[in-house]
Image 1 (spheres, one colour):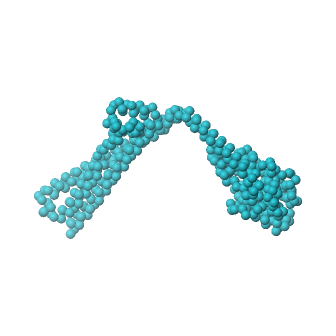
Image 2: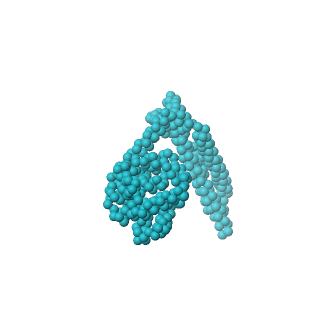
Length: 403
């Protein structure tokens, strides 16, 4: 908090009810004595009350507004003792019990409770007393000792809410806290907004220094990092994926060979049967199912051949720039057209750069996947056409037979 706005001890107890409220809150903190509450403490409550008196005097509040802001300030933190996630409800409840016990006038209670509700809500603050109290709370949180006290907030949230933050996450959280700090009264803006700005600058510089040290450390350990990338886990990943792709390709080729063999045999048999003694002339009814089977069988055969047909693509040759060529040098179709000298030169660069090596393997896996995708699409079409054609042939034959 700005030392220029630090009031004397005597200004806190403005009225008898204020003195009683201070003693009541002190007793509650002593009785509850939750050691985990290290940020929202009685000390912070006392600082908030002092700042309320200072800001109330500086901003020319009326006696009623001043009293409402000061009395509400004593109950701001006490709710955290009983319900950390919903402190407003317990703070209001304790304030009402306190006023009832001391027979405080009900017409004076309403504005105090309204101020207390306002500072806990996210709604715009319209009451001047609520604005002063909100500024006092922000001043206690984001004042001169913010960077010293904010670790206490981190510890408090870890103990009471079990919220764990990494150092980077906590740094970003502090920045968000500072960016959300808003002051309403003119004196609070003049006294505390520069402090918030200074905290932001200091925190940002601290985070930047950490990032720079991490970056420098990363450069110093680049070779070690590249070695780590050749770990057993990475090698296992590529070995497993290559084996899987090759197995899938073999399965697709086997299934395609099955369809080729089945369709070729059946088409040959059907052609032989219908050619024998001009069967289509002697039994005209078999012409329709025979044509359906021949057409669909031929289509199925063609798709199976397309699935099994080898196709080697080459995107690298002697005229390809070396920067592009060395990125796709693993697959034989990409280096078969290269001269031996250039191929050896490219492979030397690949073996000396772990990132380039694993990049080549990654791109090769990708292209293998594209080939498998085409194989299985043709294979699926082959089986679907065969199934539909076979069903249509049988159904047509039955219709002809039964009519």
